[in-house]
Length: 234
Image 1 (cartoon, rainbow, N blue to C red):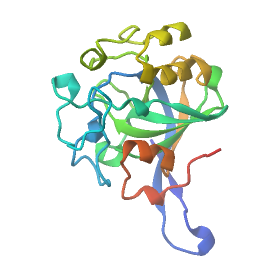
Image 2: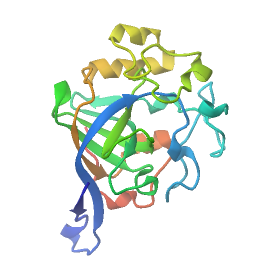
Image 3: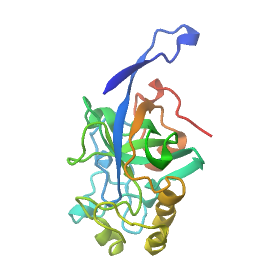
Image 4: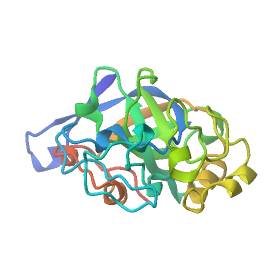
């Protein structure tokens, strides 16, 4: 991973600078319903851990509640689904693994992902990192997309009784999204409407200040969040 010096207050003559992670990366997709790793306390210097929900999608106050993937009550909230801002910009959440970093550096950080391959080339998705995974590669963003496949862990069966789609890759058509739980349908449709059913497109990424629209959902703001360039907006 390259590091880009963000001169955040140069116009005002201030000396403060910040290191914004940037580089080239890859993407995959998933939705496993599990409690995100950044929802546990003590992962990073943040306002509070990522909000989780019970199986009825009601927010939980206990950051140490066990994951639904391990028999506990905590699941990913359905509002962690991606959503379009306009035809070329969307916001969402992702599990990440960045070369040279750890959860302490990426938990609740936001990244502007500009896709460089496939039908979404030129589009930008701003994600907040809420999770990681032992099966992720270097500079890897695993995008949270309902119906994207549960992958290694399946919290969707205890939460919803199961959801459609293959373990890896998820649903194969927009019509299958009709079979998703009601609160996950919009995020599933997003994959085919805004994301154009892109299959793991390549990307470039740059760390940015989190949009309020994302932190209002996750409840998590990094203490250094204000050090980074503003995220793309409508």
